[in-house]
Image 1 (cartoon, rainbow, N blue to C red):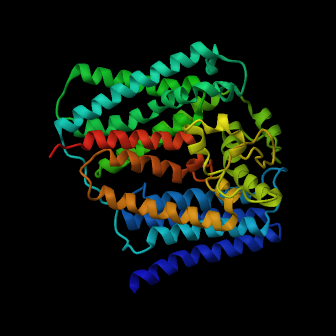
Image 2: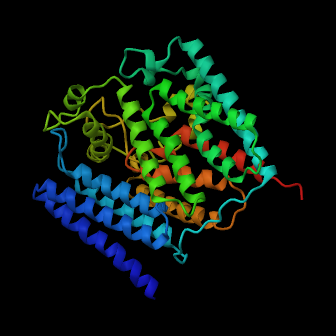
Image 3: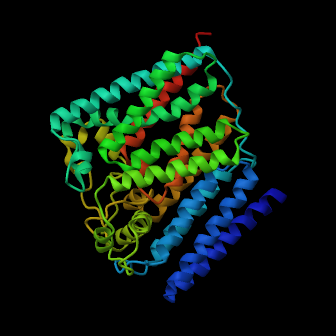
Length: 435
């Protein structure tokens, strides 16, 4: 009973903050509306980090991203932004509550106390082989793409060259090429369980990681670059229970530095971005404008969908990974709903739940958020019991997806499922035992 009352109190503060933010938005007090949700997101993140004992606890990350991102969007710093439809507000509220129900349903809350992976020569050898195989396959596929398409995005003068660096017939090669982003996370696990000090293996691992970071940089893909750093950082935090605060600061610095480097390589200046997003303050620095765009506009695109969608697509949007990976999209293009409702043709990023609403409306976002909450808690339970180190790679990916819940339709993306399938294959191989 005490645990239940505690949960009700925790979500009660969210409900109250959400309601006050909604009223403030109706009154066009946008700064107040946004600040209320941002403060609530930070408060709940800190609260659940203390309760769980982990900086990367999945519910805490989702709260900070989803509620905090909504608060940032509520600030309305762009003239493109307008007041949201009440269905949009209802959907955002339902999503967070449904995630919480799925996360808490039938399970007692406990601290995130996964076992640190133990030294294991056999599993370390298998992880090393997987890293080397990913290196060879990814590098090979990337070279083939360069030869077939004829240029490397980072050396192109086009600001959106990465978007065109692909051919429909090579989409499997493209997925294989970007799978190298799993290498840094696997490297953290390999270093943790490896019991030998082999110079040639250390050298091979260094080369593999150089390639893993070079490919996203050459693609000019900020997302892939930050994704691989994020997954590796989450895994490092999980498997090193007594990590120093200075190490956390260093990890944060690395992520920020990576963001700056990849942003500079995209050849977009502040004037261009401020004009595209029609910022009210036209002289805002690029390192503030760009994150604001990638957070705030996604919620506005969801609102644009709510206001303009004539009818639900009844599952076709979320089936896209299956349609794409099987090649059906080339045979039956009508299986992919073509219209994407956006505030601007240049601002195409979406939230995690865009496709769920596109398919089934408020019911769709409720069910998907509920399932994601269940999966998040199941993964936390698994890492407490599993002896297979690759389970941390699953956790790392889900953690990044939830930490960037405002950013894209993760589970409607073929790449997401491709990475999860590869992770599953590695998990089976590393944990395989004839007995």
